Amino acid sequence: MADNTSNSDRLARDAQKRTTAATEIGMIALKPIMHFQVAMLRMWADSIERFAGNYEKGFEETVTAVEEQSDKDRAA
Image (cartoon, rainbow, N blue to C red; front, top):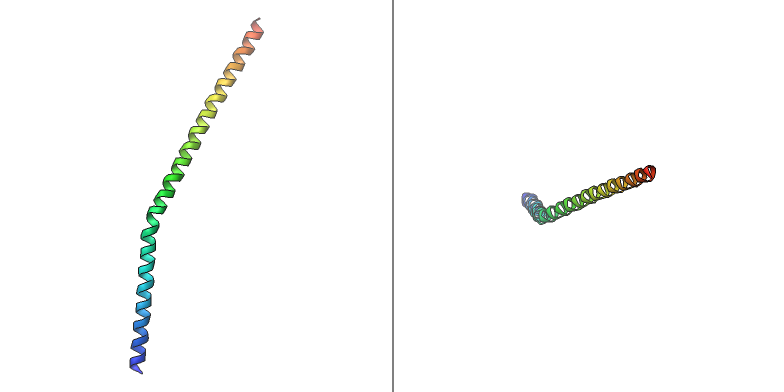
């Protein structure tokens, strides 16, 4: 009877060790993937900020050109 108990305890410990090892391997493999995804999100955010800045600059230039044209029309 004691032999069965120690045998099942050993099997449970072995299964737990395998699960722990597999989880550790998975986490090690996941780390570079997560770093890559974070880098891609940062690039995406930078691109959106750059686009927004260019859009605002173009909008301001258009408003300035329209105001100048309006001023010229009033002066004439």
